[in-house]
Image (cartoon, rainbow, N blue to C red; front, side):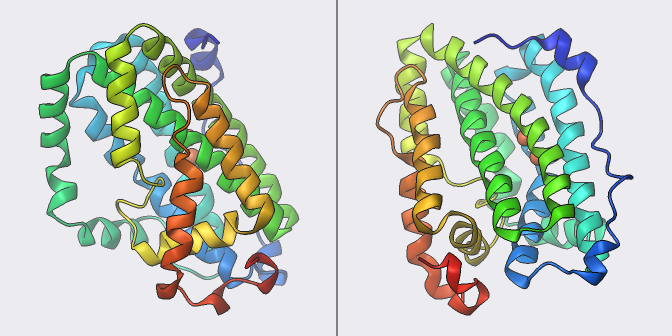
Length: 278
Ligand SMILES: [Fe+2]
Ligand SMILES: [Fe+2]
């Protein structure tokens, strides 16, 4: 699996949705459980700039192919946030800077200190630290794309499905980059495999869970990944992780979902349609 950065640079673009009738949401609004997922996704898409901050203080910044990709990745993710903001605004909800500013203001010292920890870990570990990031990025992009697919399917709203389909195509290219980088870097170093395995098993958590309240992550897990089909999606992602060199048998996504389902005490069951609470 090789990623063609030249083709990606030629193809990258901001997401466009001017041809979609977002006014349809006023006639046919999304249910509250779906909007709650969208708020989470909106906030996390906009947080990509902060994830980039954490990446650029590591050895990753020394690799021109990685920095080329990251330059467009952060741009594309920004427009995913803008697209979701447009959906929230069509429902009369606050979005964009009105949500992102207060959300960043709520983040604690751990988030503020993260770049220092990342820089120190990268300095101590060396180039193999980049492999950890690339595998981590692959898992996050796989789960993000799957989350969008589940949201579109379960919300069954034609305008949302069209918009989310466009986002998913770009997430697919992000997957291709991170997975190809992870595969190459892990295949080249047993030490990178051991480090990545350790970091994912001990530290990985669903994307956004480090900056969003636990009840919101639990809601997302239940609303999008509950039931047999949700479990099937989680296991499919775990099988993809299994195929990366040295990462077989981690069961990350299934394990994280069962942990989040267990936290539903904080999240009212009534928030999610009964059909989703299998
Ligand atoms: Fe995105
Ligand atoms: Fe992405």
